[in-house]
Length: 251
Image 1 (cartoon, helix red, strand yellow):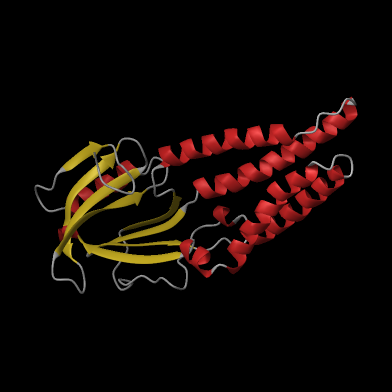
Image 2 (cartoon, one colour):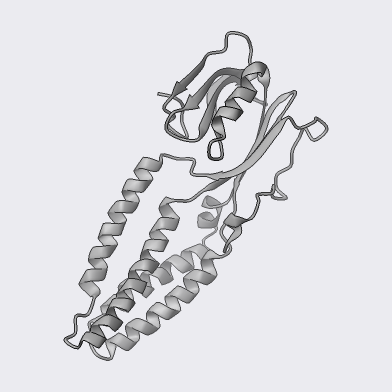
């Protein structure tokens, strides 16, 4: 469950191709490789929606001690649903970058979270017991059991048995570039990213591909990465500072 605290290592599915070349600079990081503003707005909307749902289902009883107990139940219910929403809107991709005299080589991957199923299973069980207990005092809580544990149960079945769902959350990619391929360097003004545009003919294709690579850096690392790259670029390569629209290019 706490794999995010461990240093990143390449999975068996990915291996460096230029292992015979000395490493000039390298790092690994976990990053949100998408538009974080949209994701944050979505999480905020879901947080308000779940707060309204929790308030609607919260049982207000006259006895103060019962109300405190029910507040704890509602807090647990909200925290569970919010954690689920957070895991959907704030997923992170694993990145490993390695520069050599030949150029850049990097890997990105996302493994299906092994901790998700046990946590969800326990959450469903605990939440179901709570709702069934409350249903003994108020049958309306049976509807809450259908909406809460029932919905999480469907999510659990999807995660456990849907091959397409697992494939959606499991990715392995390896890429490599030569220094001559890069046509622009941009230092992001809004995120810890160094953006490299490139122009090259990909293996197996007969046309030139022009796109960009977002180098996701650790905190306060992007300036050092950009300064390292600059001397290796072809003379006259544009170097600028700009807002980066991850995972796309500069404004």
